[in-house]
Amino acid sequence: MKKLSIALFIIALGLVFSASSIFAEMAKEGSGEYRGAKSGTFEVIKLGEGRLQMNYDEQGAMVDAPENSPFFNSSFRALGTLHSIDGKYKSYGSLVFTCPNGDQVFAVIAADGVLGAGPTEGGADLIGGTGACSGIEGRIDFMPRPAMKSSKQGTYQGIGIGKVSWKIP
Image 1 (cartoon, rainbow, N blue to C red):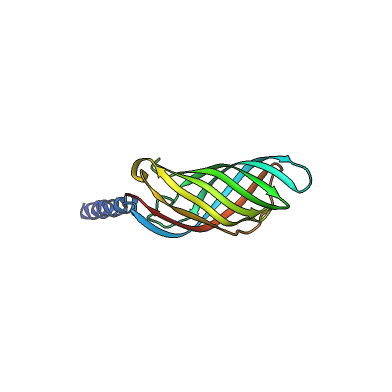
Image 2 (cartoon, rainbow, N blue to C red):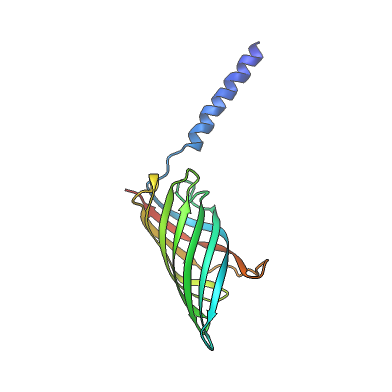
């Protein structure tokens, strides 16, 4: 009976400590590096020699982000467009992150890059959110990323890397 009481005490103690780490409060501001895994589909319109317009629909998950940030274990979706001249592009779009608790963070994308290699400068400005992320502001800076070969025609896969900073009022 004494062993059962000790075992129950240890289990209860473990639950108390694990619950506090599971429900840890999100930091109101911070910064750090991130890494996301993504895949998407695209449509291309060729505009003669050396020019094209492309629309993309991308989904993914943050696989590494500051632990106390709204981006930790979040998923994301991006819709956007890019216009390319001789392999260099300008891209604009929108981005929604969904936190594990369902809160969302909204961002707008503006980036320059090279077709097949990804962004060379630019990023996304955080423009608001829902729930605990309401009023969030900040920036996601994109960094050059490793090139990846697609596993299926008409899709792309990739890794996004960069830096993120945020502030929640």
